[in-house]
Amino acid sequence: MADLITTRQTADGPDMNRRDFLKKTPVAVAWVAALAGALSPLRNLGDTISAEEFLQSHYKELSPDDMKRVLARITDEVEREYRVRPHLRDVTPMDGVQFAMALNLTRCIGCRKCVHACVEENNQSRSPEIQYIRVLEMPQGTMDMERGNHDYDVEQVPRDGHFYMPVQCQQCENPPCVKVCPVEATWQEPDGIVAVDYNWCIGCRYCEAACPYWARRFNFSKPELPAEDVNPDMAYLSNRPRPKGVVEKCTFCLQRTREGRYPACLEVCPTGSRVFGNVLDPDSSISYILKNKRVFVLKEELGTRPRFYYFFDS
Amino acid sequence: MLALLALCFVLDLWGEVEPVQPGQSKGRQYSANETVRDPLLAPRLEKIGFEYGCVECHRNFSLDNKRRQRLAEHTSIELDHGANSRCDNCHLLDKLDVLVDYEGSHIAFEESEKLCGKCHGPKYRDWKEGVHGRPNGYWLASRGESVKATCVQCHSPHSPAFKPMTPAPAPDERRGSGGNGHG
Image (cartoon, rainbow over all chains, first blue to last red; front, side, top):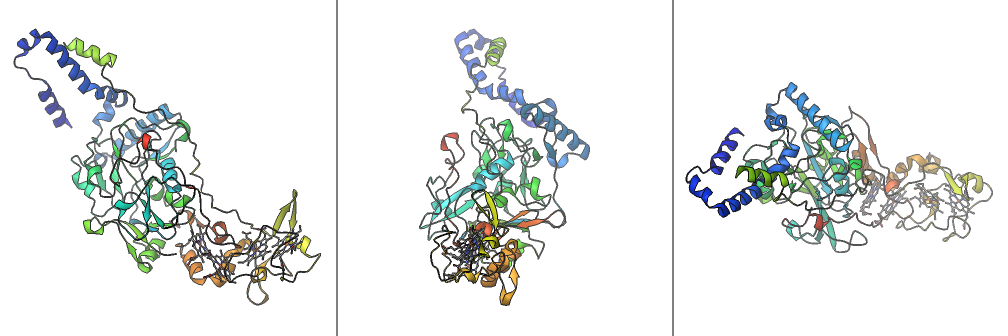
C-alpha cells in the first residue's frame, strides 16, 4: 500500500518548468480541470473510507483482536447506513470439510429462483443489479456454455428443446482468478471456497477477466441495497455490504454452510436440482452423487478443476 | 492553482454522475423456501367452510371404484399417473383415512412417501440418500436437522409429472448485471 502511494505522488508532481507553466494561465486552468476530473473518484473514497479502514491489514494478517475491532467497526457502519444491527462474524473453515456442489441438469427447469434467493441472502446490490448465478437456457444437444442464453423471457419454463444450466463460481481447485490477483485479495480457503477480502481488493478486475465461467462481478457504482431488504446474518468474507469498486462472487454462502446449513440456492430450488455437502465425508449426499452418477465439469480442458459438478439423471 | 483545484474538488465539478436510479425494495420473496405443493397431511377435507374427515362422508355409502369420472365429489381429481390408474391402488376404499400398504396394513397420510416408495423403489432410495427431492436446514447433522421435502410436496399423487412454472425475472440489462460479459 505504502509503495502505491509514493509512486502515485511522484507521477503526479512534475517539478520542472513550474514557473513557465504557471505563466500560461489557460493551460493551467485546463490542467487543473483535467486533474480534478481524474481525481474525482477519490472524493467518493473520502466519503466511505475511514483512516482505520484504510490502514487495515490483509485478512490473513489480522490478529484475533484486530478482527474483533474490524468486525465492530463494520457492524457500526452497517447499522448506521441500513438501520439494522447485523450479526456479523468471521466464519472460519471447519476441519475435515471440503465443499462441493452438484447440479442435476435433467431436473432443473430454469425457474431462476436460485438467482434471486442468492441475491437476497447475500446482500447483493439491487441497482445496479448484481447476480452471482446465471441460468443459461441451452439448446438441446450441446454442452457448450457459450451457446447458452441467460436472458430468456418466457411465460413458462421449461421450453421444449431446451435444458437449463445454472452457472456460478465453480470454486476451482486450480483457480485462474486467484493467480492473476496482483495483491492477493482473493485466495482459496482450506474448505475449497475461493474468498475475497473486499477491504483489500483494489478493483483491477483481472480476476473477472481470468474467470472462464464469468462468475465474478464488479461494483461499478455504489451498491444499492434497500434497508428493508438487508439480510443481517453476515460474514466478513461473504455477504456483508460491499463498497464500490470491488469484485465479488459466490462464496457457497459461507455464512451458512460453515455453520452446517445449506446454501440459499439449494434451499429455494423447487425441483431439488442441487446437492451440496462435504466430499471428505463418504456418507454425504454429495459423495453419493460423485460415486454413483456420471458427473462432469464445465470447460474441463482448461484444467481449472471445479468443485462444481453437473450430471444428467431423472 | 491548488486553491482552484480544491474548489473544483469541493464543488464536485467533475464528479461522477450517479449512473442509476435507486433500487426499489422488491421485498424478500425468494427467501421463502416453500415447495410447489401444499399437500394434504391429514385425511380431512374442507368444504363450504367446514372440515370433514374422509370417513365422515364415506361411511354413509360404499364405492366400487368403477367410476372413471367423478360427478358428485372430488371433481377436480383426474388421474394422470401412467398405468397407475385406479383410486384403490393408493386409497383403501373401505377405510379412506389411510393409504394402502401391502396385505391389509396401512400407511398414514403424513407418511405418503412410503406409498410412493412401494412402486418407485429407486427414487425412494435416492430420496432417502438426499439426492432426489430437496433437503432444508442443516447438511451437518451435529448442528441441526435436515428436513426432506416429501414426494407429494413436489408431485401431485394424482398427476405426478412436475408442472411447468413461470420463471422469476430475467437479469435487468439496463441495470447492468448480466449481459455485458461473454455468453
